[in-house]
Image 1 (cartoon, rainbow, N blue to C red):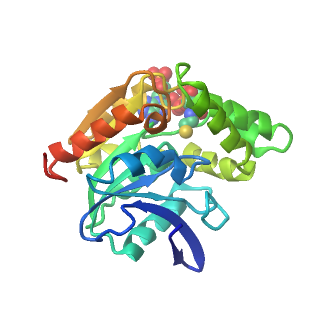
Image 2: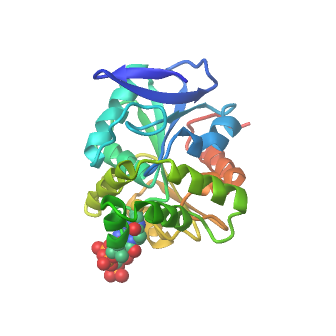
Length: 264
Ligand code: COA
């Protein structure tokens, strides 16, 4: 697994293709609470012929050094440093849930390398159900709440293999890491500012998303002028994992339509 060292801490990532040129378009994926690069497995494998696909693991997640952070601005600094450390020159940032908050924050003070934005299972505010926050941040029933969270992430129609894999992943995730991530989400609120995002923006939501309902995606679409909204049937909060084929087709088409890659 390749990595970079920033402020003495290891940040892990996966790039497909493995060898890439930093001046070419990269799509950089940022996972959500308790996530890792595997959340983007089907994009890494399915879209690497279109542009360089890179999945970063935030501090404390996957193979990146702990600890995690408890605020969106703190995570933003790692992502910006990562891009600049790799010398990426043209980036579409795609974030899911907590990742979408990080991406919105960066898009509100855009960098010269930022060429496009993807918001998956997103909201301009990400207030968390108090029962989840308390259950995950207080000792006692954290395992029960991690299991509930993994259930809430998925559409009722999502099949057993992914359901089991996600539950297993959350079982092996330290509750304090997810607690920090959810605290970061809970504090996040750019409702008043999100209309300032001017970059081409793809907003995608699963129609069965219970954590960031379609209403949140529609709000983003109404306020971000250069945006496109895609609603994916039969997907919940993790559309890139639940409906990867549809997700990849929509993302590939968006890249062509906004001129980030050439059409075939
Ligand atoms: N975009 C657009 N509208 C939003 C929004 C967003 N990101 N976040 C909240 N709103 C709306 C709500 O729908 C509500 O509208 P209404 O008055 O028409 O019903 C209003 O703003 C106030 O919402 P909020 O401040 O969140 O308070 P609340 O008491 O209505 O709801 C929760 C609090 C936690 C119950 C609610 O946010 C929720 O169900 N969240 C989803 C579950 C969750 O934990 N998600 C995790 C996100 S990572």
